Length: 280
Image (spheres, rainbow, N blue to C red):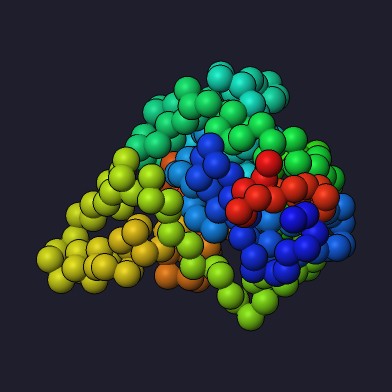
């Protein structure tokens, strides 16, 4: 069976990582191939580490404290497209690795993790196509411009998941898979839950009533749902990034927030061969 024979919502798996992806679009504008989106949050990591040498005026440009919301320069973009054992290399003069002191909570540093591509089956990686991914770049407060970045793996944009355009900038085209706000709630993989469990949910210094409301099952229990990154910046600030939250709502957080999940997308060769749902 070939990948192009699948329809929207059908699944494709990778045997090494055991990750499952759903077909999000076929013949989609801007992407030459079959668009897949991961069914789960694969792990948590910061979008971009704080850059102490970057400077930045408070409150709108504090990259030195909270990281940078430029996806093309982000730690996550580099990690998702690396097949190296040691994936981090500075991408600009003030870049820093996602290690404890540069992170919001110092719970999920990934500077020493394998590059994401190294975790996948070679056949799966070989079937990926490098795409010109549209990215919105903040140029000043409430201002931006659309650029592109080359990537085999990337984060969804606000536009692509059907949550509207950021300040009128369309980062791509809505994906059929997310039509009508479908499939936006997303939980971690079984493996991630075995490793971290409820540790993904940091404690709150609130009273018992508030703690029960904020920490209840199916609200902030990661085995049901969790936060995940989009590649879209919040244009008012240089360090805020759009996310889907644990309740299926759309919001934003600091770029160096290391307890937000990653839900990758990729574009695949339509002629890739499938056996029992796996790329071979």
